[in-house]
Image (cartoon, rainbow, N blue to C red; front, side, top):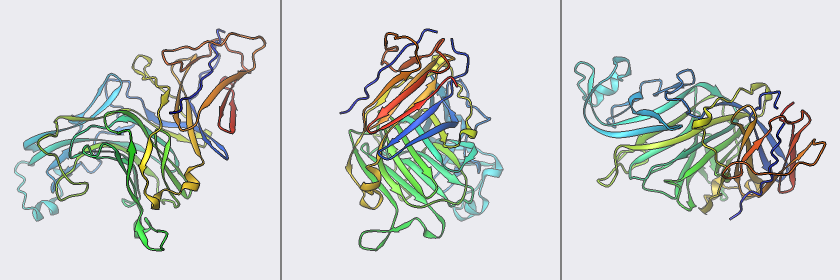
Amino acid sequence: MKHPILFFLLITFGLSAQLKPILFQFKTDTVLTWHYQFGDEFSNKNIDQEKWIPRYPWGGLLLDQSQWSTPAMIHVQNGWLQLTTDRYGKKAKVENWMINQEQARELQIDFKNDSVYLDYLTSCLWSKDTFRYGYFECRAIVPDGQGLWPAFWLYGQNQKDEIDFMEMKGERPNDIHIDIHLPQRKDYVKNKLGIKKDWGGWVGMSPKLTGDTLIFSGVWLPNSLTYFVNGTPVSFFNGDFQTSMNLIVNLAVARDGYAFNPGPNDQTQFPASFQVDYVRVWSLDPRKSTRFETNKEQFTVGSSFKPRAIENKVGLIYPKKELSKEKGFVSFIPIGANQYAIQYNGNEDFKISFNGEEKQIENRIKGKNGNIIDLQNAPQNLSIIITCGNQKVEFYPLK
């Protein structure tokens, strides 16, 4: 197993400028520089209502599956978003505008006083902002348990475009489902025999994915889409989407006979939580850069995420030639006026060095895992150099 090689320099001089978050994506033939556009570290006690709708905009009531996505099932604890689900087994009062009256008639559901019987309560966050292209990442812990169905995805304004970066089932601990949805069946692609197949599928990985802190992410560029787990590329789509999309994280309950069945069994533990450490969106356009806001006491510093091995590649969505170019991601996250936390996820070793010092200063590692750079009183011309494989990039954090 490869681990990043880190060389840190602590500079004991004052910062005159606010550090900006930045992320570098290393490939064999290029380095992409990403700028922080949107995100949430969930460092506050309450959900930021300026960023999120704490349920689906249409209400989240699934009459045919007897469940409801409600803000009451969303909590923040110790810097982690807790998207929860629980058995309910009784009637709940819902707002009338959420009720699909036509579906209620078809299912012969009698809404008395706007109350309906529900088997489960579930949870969802839906971004108020929409995005077209970018690097989308979610650091999270997926729960075990049959029928539990967490997801991290984008949904288009035309109600047809959809990018599913991650869907999982609690009873399939080693598998991640990735998918897209496009109108007019443009999500069908030809296999090696020339037969059209539905793009997407279950990818088997090891070690297991549930119960561990992982980074699920995707790069959406014009005419391409690449999926990653801890920086390991798992699929590539050659195509595009027509609309801007909302970003969603949610925990649902699958039902027998419906999508992603089976549903829960007697061994499924309730309540259950899909735990999200952060959600971040990065743009190639520096003009979209925004400030990174976090509570340092609640910020989770993680330096390295071990790559996952793919045990079951889906040939239709895994072009080896394209994905072999991917090496890893290195992000610099401000955790104060003077310090960066460094996070790495990928399959290639990397190192960090510095230029711009007039005199030799002893290299020192700061932080429990050696993943903090302290730039207090650093000179304005200081540059940080990151080397990964055959690629090298240099940036000036104080300019």
